[in-house]
Image 1 (cartoon, one colour):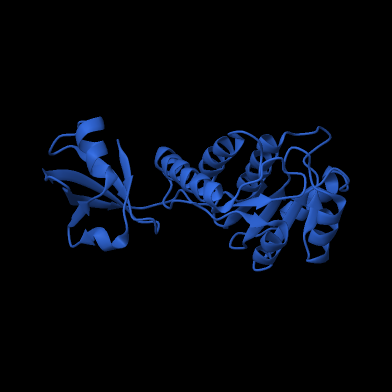
Image 2: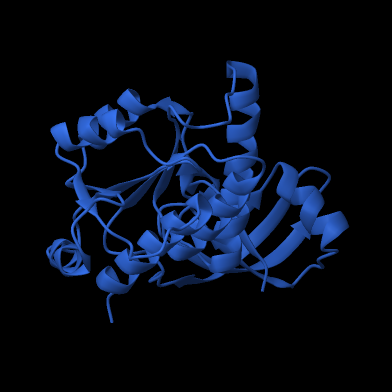
Length: 246
């Protein structure tokens, strides 16, 4: 069944009005028909099983058949602070992080990042990443569309992270897995959790020191060296396994 996202304002009584690019996608790409069923999420953890009532030139009217209980979100909001990687790796990271349950992704410009984006390029990249996040949310049945924020400097990202309950930084010089298990096991549902992932070259020692000064906790992801596009997903998988409710 096809899945679409709307805003709560598009719900009126027992009807939902689809507008914008989704109209063309439904009519001309998916070639959907009247009376066909679709799933609709309002981005606030509400889902509706709907039936297409009518197609109009720039709108599609849906009739709500049933409000569906949503149970696809993690009990904690997870924030991925991702050092800018090379080429199109960020697209893969965004897509898979959304599938694994991330709440928000913050692209971070670090000292060792090869990629340097001016404001114009950064804006286009962020737009593209948010489109991928929306697609990933549809595919994985999320109740919300995780946001990809504007690119931040490392210091800006640390300031942003200060509002979270727990901040982790996977680091090759962190203590062993036993200590990491103890840290992860103390995380409780409802707490907001952020973690920093470096780019291909990793973090500068100065950046790690700065993160520790503001309360970030170093952890290890094992004895192997992980690529930047693997490290964040590994960390997310650990948190998902720990936090996922039965």
